[in-house]
Image (cartoon, rainbow, N blue to C red; front, side):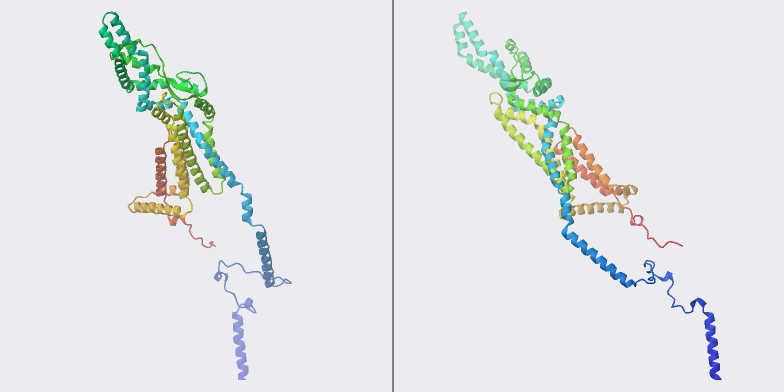
Length: 499
């Protein structure tokens, strides 16, 4: 009976447990943790294989084998057809074309300098006068001009001949002794008069009046010079005995007036004369005429063509930075070649002018003065080419360039931090500058480049000054540019979607 009672009790307990358990939980496998407890980022579980399908393990093995075969095929393809070789084959034309364009630009650069000089110094009267005006203040030119004018006056005056005539007149009137003395000392008298005239002419030539007259004569002669270069007619600048000469008639007239005012009235008996001063050989005028006509037609086209060729070569090149370095060094080298050509032309010119026509020192001064603006331009472009090449180098990946940029950045960062610690903050302006810093740098470089190109007379000093100012502007852009704070720059973490 006790056993029966125990079984009944057990049955009653089991029934109570069964009643307390939901019907759906019967015969069910152990419950899995709720979805909220699973990893949110875990991928969803793969669905169970459908009836009649092979187990998942077989599919994985088949996929792995297919992936392995695909990778093997790709490796074989890469071995048979390397992509680098294909790229080199497709882009192999860019390097030689870029080199040709840059070389052409560098070759035409000196010609463009000559074209600009021709347009600005020869075709423009004001610039021409500005170019030749300093000649009259040079001692060598003053000496040559004084010798030329004095010789012409003394030759026309003939003091010794006049002295002999006076001696003959005295002798015929019975003053034989006086006439004999005049005949004896006629040479000394002529020499003294010649020396006096030469000294007075030297003072007159060095006076401001002659300097003003020099500018006036050259201004009037400029139109004739252009005609001579273009092959039209003659005038103040003419060809005489195979030489291109400048007429000195106005200077003779001024000297005669000054000598007469100082008591030597005998010069008024000299008829109007118009001697000349040789400038250079006429055979070089023919060459200058041909070059003038050609360059005058291309004076606008050549500089633009040079810029287009250099820009196209840099754009087509694979390595733009290396192309910029090559273009800068090539431009500097072309200006150096132009300087050598001018030195050779100087030697040829000095050898072409006889010393009895124009002294060597005066001829050298004349040549150097005429080409001084060419030399200024080529020196300026040489410096610009070197500056561009150096700037491109320091933007590169070399250890020196990277270290230099890092040092400058740290220095500017220290200045910015020091200013902020003292209350100097750029605020929204600094954030705006930082955001548009690349555009501001490009704009600054373009602006200073345009200033250099369109300034009246580029010189080495101007080029260096503009380069220094550009560095200052770039430094200010870097100094003002302040990156936004980390709290405003970095996006907030994205949490799970609500609901």
